[in-house]
Image 1 (cartoon, helix red, strand yellow):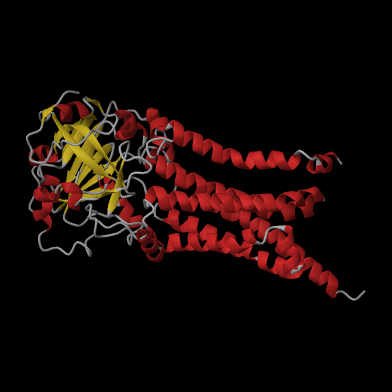
Image 2 (cartoon, chains in turn blue, cyan):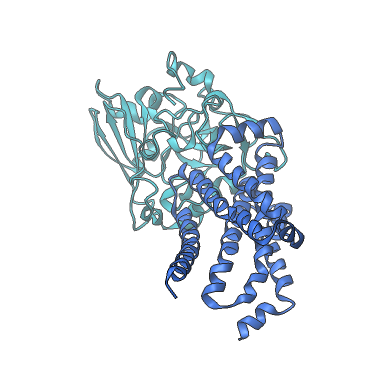
Length: 208
Length: 268
């Protein structure tokens, strides 16, 4: 199959790596060139948040799409996408801490404690930390596949917290259209997994 | 649209003006979309002539005023005001217009008039953003009558010496410099005098977040962000610490007495 062969091509992974870096390069270029509009700080904070959500959706899509299409080569990209989700999440936090709060740590700590929407976003990022830290092969071996998988199910909680963060932020302006799109995508991806798990369980429960 | 420098106390801040480009491309005008670039891109569809403003309610002289009449009603003044958005950014804008009280005096409010309501145009044919359900349309804002009568409350027809660009609320808008920007209704088609506090657009959609008064106040935070500081658009760079927000946006000397004895945490 052609799609399979393309996915397994040695250049596929470096290509994806470069693609994932493009938004970062574009934002960095825009910040240096001064082309991010009247409020570059807001543009940087929002764009890095948007890209975190988009990459999270792509990461969550890998397994359901692999199951639906049989393109098992996709599995090679999951770790890369997950790590880039973390990368943009960290950038998002850095942009907020730097451009909005001037890196004043007590101000940031007070702000995180005081504002539930920031607290929830922060919790999502903290929760991603152990996933990113155990993403390399030796960690998988050290933990054992079952425990590693159980730990990495935390990505569902990350997705929920990230959506809540976005929803809460937009509720200030009553503007839920974009939130709904992301919620629908995440809902469908999680639904596909739940559906598959349920079918396997009922199939296993059938007498042979 | 020429205007002579205003003599109203506080009407001419000496601060550096925000660039025309930023003033006219970074706008909140949800009738044209929720993105701040939307109004400049999409407000070309707004037709500002012919244009009339209905004045009704508790006034002895209700009526329909043509924009040409309103342009000649009083002499045009230039006023340089700070604008503080509830989102935490600010600008300094040279407006052209006259005190709203020039119009109010001519329509003679009755003894029952306690509040003034301002209605923005709501025409789907001209305003693509009305298809969204972010707010109830038309956009309604309101002031207490004494706030509306304050000489700093401006009926603006222009900025930077020219006629208002559509995205900034053409052909006429309100500017209340000591309140968050959303209190200043754009593209006004109706002014109604009432005895009851108006149900204003943001107060209706999110009452716990946006009060009727919405005076700029660094000590009363928005539920999801602090109002203690602000970023001056075009001036405060990425690495500049945000500047402190001033009580009543720096107009405390002029307007503080309007709120004497009021608990501003309760009447936010």
